[in-house]
Image 1 (cartoon, rainbow, N blue to C red):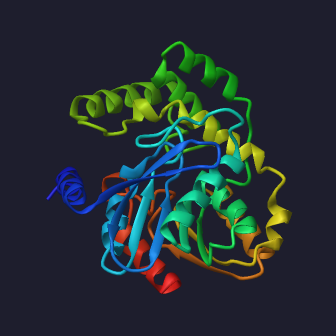
Image 2 (image 1 turned 180 degrees about the horizontal axis):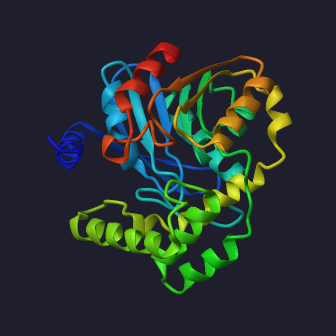
Length: 293
C-alpha cells in the first residue's frame, strides 16, 4: 500500500470519526478544531506550514486513550485571521480558550507551536504536562523576510517558499534555488488538483510562514525566562534533525527545572506528522503515552 493510499484512507476515517468545534479567543478570533477519541484531553498544536491535516495519523494513534483536539492555528483552515497585534500572546490566548472549554491539561507543540507552548506554560496553570518538539530557538535571522513578503505580495508563491525554505533552513534548503522553485511549483500543482472542500494546501499556507517567523524572532532572547516553568516537560526531537534544532533542546534541557528528553530514531523535524511527509506517528504516540499516561 502506498503512502498516498494510507493518507487517503486515514483522512476518510478521520472525517467519519471526528467532530468539529469552535472557541472564541480573547480578542474575538474564532479558533476551529477537530475532536477525536475518548479519555483525558490532549491538544496537538501543529507547526509552521501545517494545519489540522498534518497530525491526523498521530491523533488516530492516540484516540483509543485520549480525547485529542486538533486546532487550526490562526490564519489557517477553520480558524480566523492572524488579526491586529499578532504575536505570541495572541497564540497563548487561543490555547487558553481551547483548554478552558475542553478541560484538557496535556499539550503537544511542534516547532513554532513549541515556542508558543513554552510561553503558555509560564502563564497557564491549566497545562499540567507539555511536550516540546524542536522549537527553533537558535540560528534565527530575518534577512530573508523582506524578499519573502514582496514575492507573496506579487503572487510568486513558489519563489516565496524557496526564499523561506532557505531563510529558515527547512528541509530542502541546500537545493539550488531554481530546482527548489521548480519542485515547489510541481508540489503545489499536484495538491491544487487533488484538493477538496476545506483542504489546506501549501499554496494557502504560504503566507502564514511570515507569522511563524514572527513568533520565532519574538523569542530570540526568551531562553532564560523559561527557567520559571514549573510544568512537567518532555523535550522531543528526531535523530536526523538539523544540529541547530538539537542545540535548542540542549539549551532547554539545561534551563527547565522538570524536563525529560527523548529522541525519535531515524526521524527528522516532521516525526510527529503523517507518514506521507516522513513522519513516524505511531512511534511518537508511544512516547506521548509514556509521558502523559
